[in-house]
Length: 130
Image (cartoon, rainbow, N blue to C red; front, side):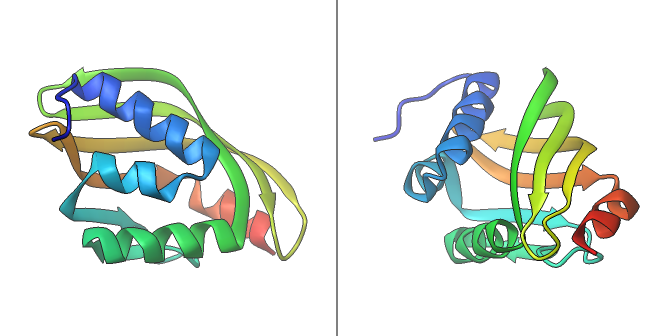
């Protein structure tokens, strides 16, 4: 059984797992019926559902960019956790480096993330992608 943790702890654990590119650890922290949303203006954008959707999102994201999100401010707002920071890395196809402002909104229930929404400077990311 998954040990309950605070929503802030859970989100910090998710970022650590993503930093290791540990999809199994991420899946263990995410609800099987999770929702993932990011603008469709990006190659990995769209609406994804469940662990299969998580795998698809992860594959499309890491296939397009090699990046890390660095949260500079993380705070809880009820069942949501908001992380404000920067995504830094490089686009795989163009090789262009980028540092782009980003905001992530997580919804947490029963010790797991149930929803993830990513908001980034889309025009800057599209420019980096080439």
